Length: 111
Image 1 (tube, one colour):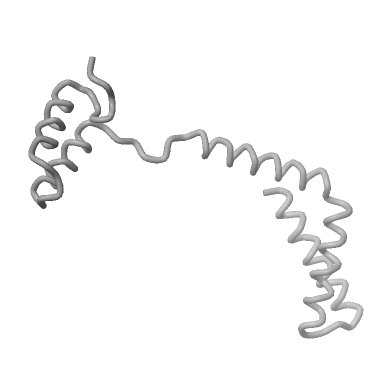
Image 2: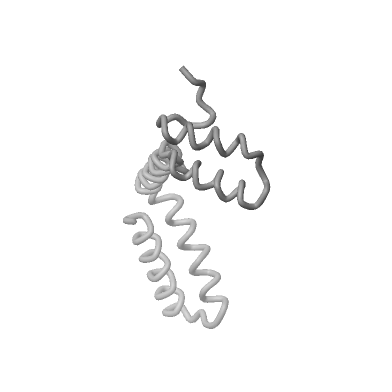
């Protein structure tokens, strides 16, 4: 967040300096963007590295969390819907009911 703030301030300062030097219209914005990029690349290496570390840690935390949590109730309900639509064999429905009643998931071995 601090890195972004510094970059915005550099761009605003470059815009102001360019305006005072007589640049106008799209050329002012283009020159200010290039100047702000160059100065931020040279002067803001420490905040940039800190921001990159923060983003990498955030990504690692997101990847460590499970995406979809399934439980026995969801599996049972899915099997009932599949059986009603004729997509599964009735024996599969019976197996799902048995698994849900025993607290076991359908893909876990019995015993």
